[in-house]
Image 1 (tube, helix red, strand yellow):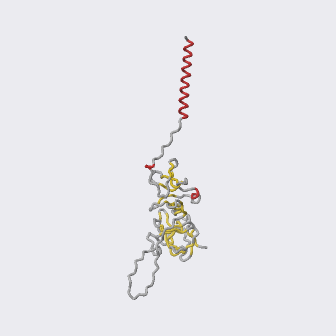
Image 2: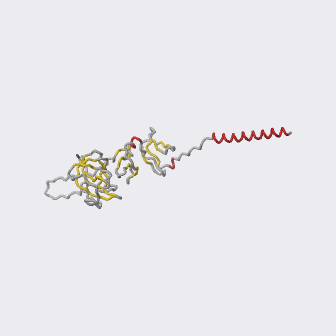
Image 3: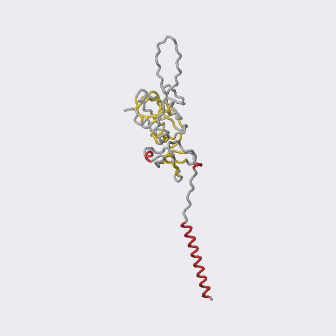
Length: 261
């Protein structure tokens, strides 16, 4: 009788061990839960395109039919921002910032506030510098052989006739010297924006690439900006486009225009 009881207890322990082992195997072998893809109805509207976008919920990126990742979902899931590929990243200086301008276009800025690259939303590619836009039309007055006075057309001011609207002075309390001279040529050191007025505002209308030779027309003007200030000059490029550009920051960190040797 005692022998039968000992066998039953042994069998019970064996059965309990088998059950525990089976439970352990079930937990370990069970597939990990997969993330639930974000439904398309919750995504912001896809960027305009002539093809059908493919969305990868794993990477949160939009791809064209060739599988090239062009956009990523913003941090809050309410917008799309263009992907910066490695081929573009290698050309960027340190400390760059990706943001949208007032028109909603994506641009990459360096730590001095200059545009390094712009996103071409139509071609789905990055363009180094500023994407060229239409420049203001410069009207050339013509003489009319007529004895009867005719009304003169109203001419829209162009960049060549714009005056400095910022609070500017001809000198600044700084040891950083301006190296340019009005009437003498200069060379653009980096991709440099052209502004309609000598101010760090949303007034960029064109840009000159690094190495461009420009004519220095007038300046310098010292214009405060945040905790520093800039030397500004009015310049004209080889295409005849006139605007204001920065020569240097008044902390002496970097020069963007240099006298032509």
